[in-house]
Every structure is written in structure tokens, then in C-alpha cells.
Image (cartoon, rainbow, N blue to C red; front, side, top):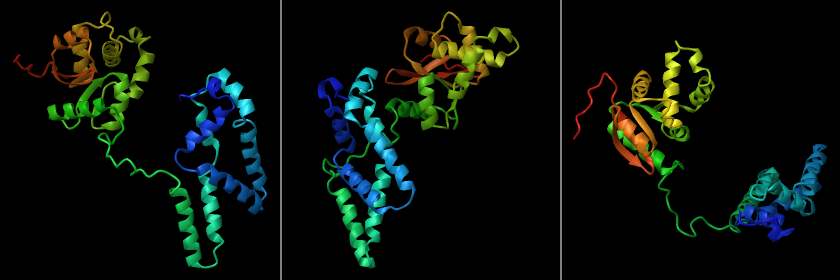
Length: 285
């Protein structure tokens, strides 16, 4: 955030509250709900609930205590998240239900319900105020992820192509397009990090060694550990069809020299089609 304890002092806490509630007035209804709860509810657990809120007010939301602590711990950008500890939604919903139940007749309860909805909705700012725009990327993932997926599917005849990607990209790819079979998936990458320290102790574990080779080259860019022969035999064994990685000249040249052809790019990522030893490598155009 663009506010700091040094600049705002005790007002730091209040400014976080103001920004947290946005355009609405939810805190007003929240405090009103807490007051109504304290007066109306007679159950024994009311005391525990109010003790919880009182504790938050004295510790988490106390400007005299929070201001020096937040400054020293360097939590100025994270402090607003503590406001999520307040049961705002639950309390406002309880207040609305409590008020609706006061009505003796159905039409009175309906009016109270509409009034509650209006009090919550109209103080805020309509999403239509600046016009309603449809997001181009509805999946909320980087555009490169969408474009890479489209490039691979447009080029591949396989409905579930086998793809080698860098770790950061594989995490997003796995969420966006499950049809891509990732060689270096999230879970497998963690296991390979354990195996790589002891891979030489298991000379017969060729299946693991090949995956470690792929990780060393594509993820770690360790050209000193993996040569062209290791790369091809490893990609053959894992049955890779596509390799996706950030562009580096050394990596680009090595892939092109080892049965790979560039088929597309997105941002700083390059997409390569790998032709294994059983496939006919297409002649240079």
C-alpha cells in the first residue's frame, strides 16, 4: 500500500479500515449489528463472542499498540489483512435476519428485507458507473499461459500432448489446461529435487535420471551437466512432444540442434516441437 506508519501515525489504522470497506459503509452496519447483538442475544456464548471482538479491538486494532508494532515488524503492506478477522459478513447477515423477524406480517417482513438490501447496496458505488467491461482473460492467468496452450493445441494432432515446461509455468499450465500432460509437474519437480542429490547412487534408475536431466537443462539451464545426447535420450524416454521455456540464446541453439523446431512464442516464452528418434525430422524450409 502507499501509506506508512511514519506518515499516518495513529491514523494508519483508520485509513486501513477506510480502504478496506471500499465504497460501502459496511463497518457502520457491522458496529450496529454488534450493538444489537449485545443487547438482544441472551445466550451464554454471547459473552465469548464479545470477548473475542473486545480482544481484537484492544490488540489488533488498537492504534496505540499497533502503530509501533507494525512499524517495527515491517508489516505495513500486510496489516489490512488482519481486518478479515472481523466477522463482518456474519454479523450484518444476523442483523438483517433479526430485523426481518421483527415484522408481524409477511408484507412487513418483505419491506424490511428490501430496506436492508437497499441500505447495503445504495451507499456503495455501482459497478456500472464506469461501464461494464468484459475481461479479455476470464481465467485470470497470464496471457502467455493462454497463448502457449493455444499454440500447442493448434500445432498438435494429439488431444493430450506431452509438454516440458519450466516450473513456474507448469504450475499455471496445470490449472489452466489439464489436457496438457506435463513432464515436470509440481509434485514431480519436488521429488526430483530430492533425487538429484543421489541420482548417481542409482545407476539403474534411468527413468529418474532422464527426468533429472530434463530438469537440469530446462529449469536450471545447466548446460555443463547435460549435453545434446543426454537431452535427446531424456526427451525420448519421457515421450516429450513440446518444450516451452524462456528465451535464452544458448538454450535456443541447443534445442534447434537437437531435433527441435520453434513453432511459436508468447512474451519471453518460446514453444518448440520436439521430434523423437522414431519420428521423421522435417527438412529445413
